[in-house]
Image 1: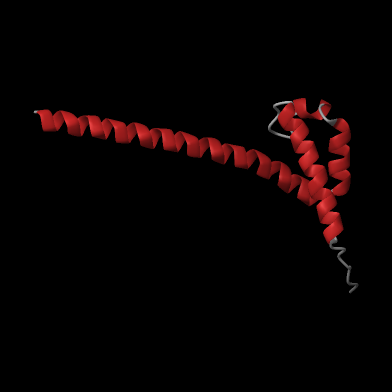
Image 2 (image 1 turned 180 degrees about the vertical axis):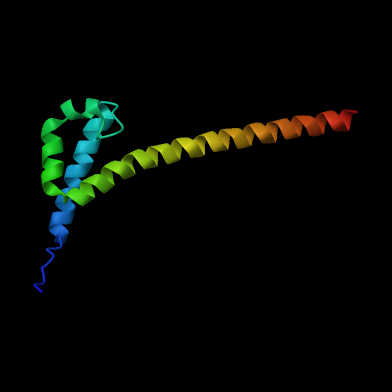
Length: 102
């Protein structure tokens, strides 16, 4: 049985990957594109995408892309939950004020 050696990225490789990812995601942000795998993203920031995919391992690219979408979805969900919570608090305060007047 042969043993394959796994080449782990060095600190410099990781930093290069993160820098390329950040530049690519900044370009997507400027273009108001959330999902890097969306069809409209294919024609945007082509050079930065190529650098990003070349600097990062494929599994990292997949992870970062999914994480980008998930973070935005989580943020939006939290904002909706906070708004709902505030609305419930306001209704409860109104109901309590009405019951005290009666």
